[in-house]
Picture 1 (cartoon, rainbow, N blue to C red):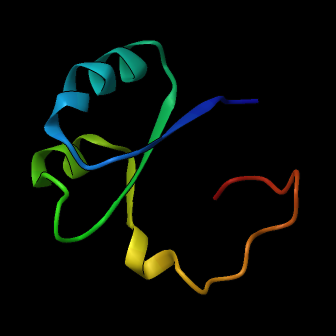
Picture 2: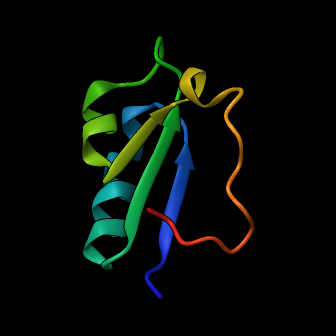
Picture 3: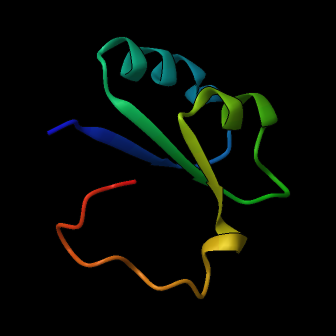
Length: 67
């Protein structure tokens, strides 16, 4: 099973953490608001989701594999 890390925030201060997570072989998923998220931070994640786009979506079943 491959581990992932999810960071909720849009600040570019997370860039060094992004590099460490990736260097450890972990998948990085970021979540932030569209108005306040640094675009370089969003691009440094394997996946990045804007909070506004997630609101109202159904949650997957517990234990369901990540896509």
